[in-house]
Length: 64
Image 1: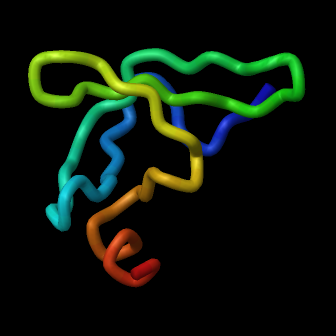
Image 2 (image 1 turned 60 degrees about the vertical axis):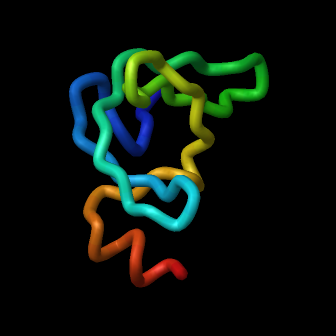
Image 3 (image 1 turned 90 degrees about the vertical axis):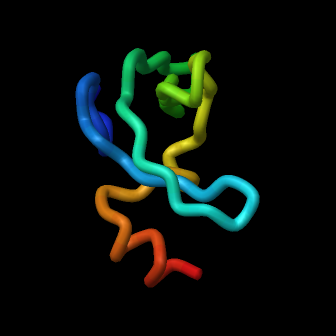
């Protein structure tokens, strides 16, 4: 299956009003074919839906 982002990709998301760059570490695909992206988040790894991630800070800002 092809996903929008791949392991190792740099992506952007928002957290408490801040734009944060992170790295995709793992991808899991559920039984419906929907990917969940596991990304670095401070000292842990957090799961994100595809619609929460953006390929650049400019794209993230444009989505607001």
